[in-house]
View 1 (cartoon, one colour):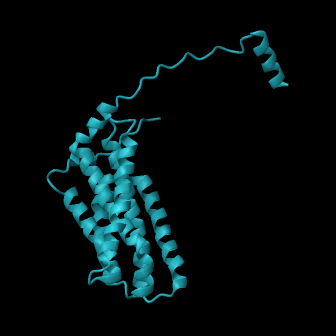
View 2 (cartoon, helix red, strand yellow):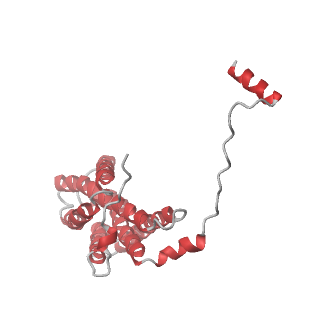
View 3 (spheres, helix red, strand yellow):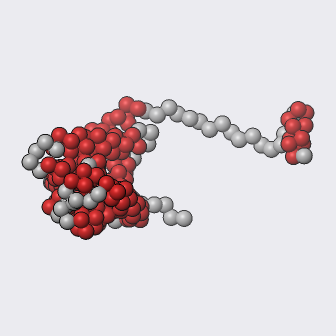
Amino acid sequence: MPFALGLSRRLTGANVGPSPEPAESRPPDLAAELRVLRSRQLLLAMLFAALINGGTFAAFTFLAPVATGVAGLGAAWIPVVLVLFGAGSFLGVMIAGRLSDRQPGLVIGVGGPLLAAGWAALALLAAHPVAFLSLVLAQGVLSFAVGSTLITRVLYAATAAPTTGGSYAAAALNIGATAGPALGAAALTTRAGATAPIWIAAELTAVALAARFSPWWTESRCSEPIKRPRR
């Protein structure tokens, strides 16, 4: 019945209600948005995000051979190891979702050093199954809490590029997700063996922390909370 009534009014030309005014749409100024990449704040945020996520994916990609070859766990434990890391990453994203906007300095300043120390501990204690499994869970939490917070930092630093800002964050994540496993694979031939990718994760995180606490890092802008409109 409502459909028939609406159709009859449409055919007879009757107005059902006021038609909305067409909104003016302006094409984005891509040149201006690309110039945002000159911002030192944005470039450092992208660098930090790429390094942290590169370390995460370097270690995660090669967890299975560490579990079976170093920790001495059977092949049946591989899904358990991956589930533990996945559960940790879920918790990490939840933590980041609550704190990344309001207290990013806390997540990065505390979680970053703990993340670097955790990767080193995981590489050193990988031969001990209980410690290995516990650290896999903890590193899942830390890596995604810090990594997700850094992605929000990239988005915040790219607010002057509303159209392409999201792509800058995605680029930082994808560069890390590609370069990290590549570096981990290349390191497998070193004396560290199966734990080499985890050492790569520790080193990338250490480099990221050095960049984060360098005098070139614009702390006042990158660590300030994002102001949300009051409802």
